[in-house]
Image 1 (tube, helix red, strand yellow):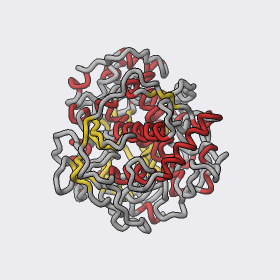
Image 2: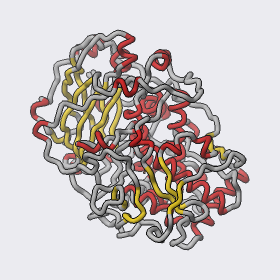
Image 3: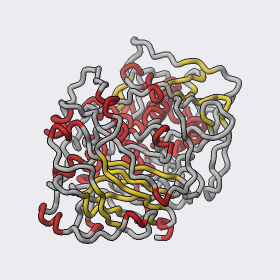
Image 4: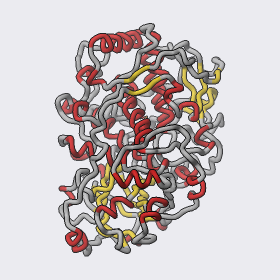
Length: 553
Ligand code: C2O
C-alpha cells in the first residue's frame, strides 16, 4: 500500500528491565483508599508488591536513523504553561482541503486569566452515564443543551464553534510553549498531557452545557464502547433531526455496525467483534502497570528524541479514525485533530477515555505521576461564566473534587485476558524465520509483515523480580503524522500473521496514529509494551531472545 510505505519507518527495537527510575517509583505510595481488587491473580500479586516499580529503558539508540528533525520539547525541564499571549494560527500546513482557520479563543489577550477554584461541596455530583442508557428527560436535556450551545454567537467562548476550536488550538500548535515567541508549541497528544488536558476540556464543556439549561446536575454521557451494548455509535447521535447529529462521519460505520477497536484504516472496512474489543481494552487498561506506559511519556524523554503516547491514548485513537468520514481527505470531523471537536460524539468518546482513567486507578491500582513537571503543567479554558481560567494538572487528578463521577456499570473486560492459541513447542519451533537484520535499520515498513529478533536483558527472573521490574519491549518508529498509520505487534507468532487478533495471547499490542499535522515524515515515536506477563503466559521466559517479533501493518 503506497501510502503506508512512505508513512512508516522502523528504527529500532529493544527490551529492557532496568533503568534509573526505580527509586523514584518506589518512593511513592498510593494515598487514597481504594480496593484495587480488579484483574487476575497475577495483577493482584503485583499490586500487593510494588506495582509502580516498572522500569523503563530507552531503546538501543538510533544508529543510522538519527536524521529526523522533530524535537519540540528538547531540554524542557519545566512544566508546560499555556500562555494567553502566545496563541497563533494553527499549523494546518498543506493538509489537503483543510480550510484555514484561526482557532485561538476570542479576546484572549485582553481577558485576565484567573486561577481555578474548586467547586464547593454543596454542588451536586454530576453522574456521567453511558450514552446508550440515556433516555427520557436526561436525553432531552442533553439535546437541548447542545442546541443552545450551537445557537450562541461564534465569538462567544462557550459557543459550539469555540469549544471545537479548543481542540484545534491545543492539537495543532497554536500555543507556543511557556509564553515564548518561537516554537516549541504546546502539544497534548503523544505525551503525558493527553489525559489531564482532555479531562479539563470536557469538564468545562459539561459545565457550560449545564449552565445553558440551568441544570447543575447535568452530566456529559460517555460512549461506553468497552461494553458490548455500547460498541456502536450510540443511537442518540445518529438521529438527523437531533442537535447531536453530525454529517461528517463514516457512512459504513453507522449502527448496528460494531466499533472495531483494532481497526486499521488502511485496510478498509472490517467488522469489529466483541471478544476482540474486550481483549483490546484488557491489554490497554487492566494489564498496564506503569504510568508512562499508560499515559505516555513526559516532554523531557518523550521530546528529547521521541514522542510517546500511552496505551490509554492509543486505545482511543481508533475512535477517531473509525468514526471520521473517509470521503474527506483528512477524515473530518473525528478523523483529524483540528476538526474532531466539531462532532458532539467527540466529547462523549473522551468522557469514556476519562472514565477508563478512573477505572485504571480505582480498580487496577494505577498511579498518577508524581513529577512536578506533570503536576504543575497548566492550560487555559473559558468557563461557564466566560471567565478565562488557568488550571493545572494536579487540580484535576481527583474527579470527586471536580464534582463528577461515572455511573457504576459492569466492566466486561476485567478478566478478558487472551489465551495462547499454540503450544509452547509450536511457538519455539517457529524460530527460524528472522527476516530482518537490526543492523539494516532504518527499515521502511512497506510490506504488511516484518519479523525479527530482540535480545532480552535477562531471562528466567523470579516472581519477586518480575513484580518489581517489568520487562518492556520498546519500538522506535518514524512516521508521517498526517497519515492514519497503524501496526500491530505479535510475539512468538508462527502462524499466518493475518490471522492474529487481540484475542490471542501472542498479540502484544498496537500503535495507531490519528492524522494531526501537515504531511512530513518527521515524527519519531517511541512505543512501549509491557511484556512480563505475556512471556510467562507463552511459557517463553527462559528464552534469551524474543523470537518472531512481528510488526504487522
Ligand atoms: Cu485530543 Cu481524542 O483527542
